[in-house]
Image 1 (cartoon, helix red, strand yellow):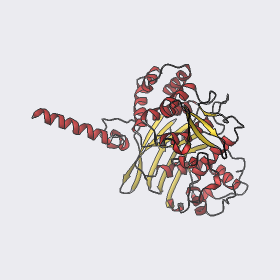
Image 2 (spheres, helix red, strand yellow):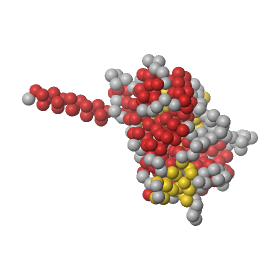
Image 3 (tube, rainbow, N blue to C red):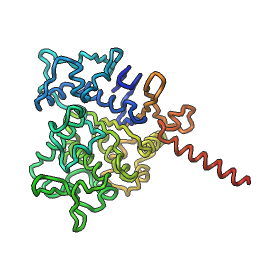
Image 4 (cartoon, rainbow, N blue to C red):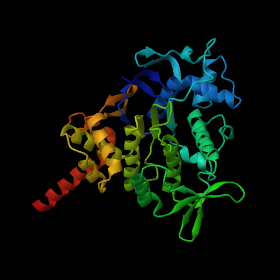
Length: 387
């Protein structure tokens, strides 16, 4: 069981989430999804976070507020108040948990949760990942660390990405590369412009397009692509060593629904590798997948149903992936809902459109507009027919 329970943390009044192999979190902006996920990483990776900060010249310190400000961003320590309660896997996490302990072995601590933040495009704003120390104190640790991880990935490649960054034959499964090509890059090649400073460029035909001139979706996806390279190394190792959990915030940003479906295919690959993936989202596409997946599992459908769902021809590389996820993996969906007391979480994994609970029936609000539109159109058609 992987469960986090939270009382009175930032805007969150009560949260209780049990993580499946894939867990989707939905809810309006500023409802606490990112804060909860950042807290989850801090609880799981405290030692590794301390090690990383000290490697870059920061002092962990002996005051919890200073530690929380350094991690969540300057001025954010107040999210943890006198009534805050946190329990991770049935073990209470007190505020004092973050203080340094004598003889605490943290210098060898490995990262267990890899975090892809919503602001990821910021780290590539000039076409290349920024250094950890380039950011102001107000920037959360997860963005600094994500940026530095991508930078180190590219800098330590020893020429592996010197010519073509995408598509690379040894990086990712070929059906997934093809899907990204068809939905995002459209026969374009991502290469490195090494004139002066290293920068990504997109070569299409005879044109060489600098990163700042890419489409919003291409720029947003580039950070995700590098994340997938990091988590799925081109070797016999099935997964990134030590990492057990992956958090991806709003993978749909800037992407067409077809491209979102391509990202979902890569998420399926991550799950099949043994990672537990947590996604916060505002996209109905991801909820539609979760709804279809639940029904396919209940009806014991075979992998051909997923090929049909994604509009793919049968592929030997994907048969095992689809079979594995349908037979062995679990999926959870939680809604962050505003109440008078504050935000609470609710398990809406059934995604039953006929439920009397509107949070379940309307998928945490993601399907409410389309449902209202359908009702209005139906009423209008009936009214016009009666005239």
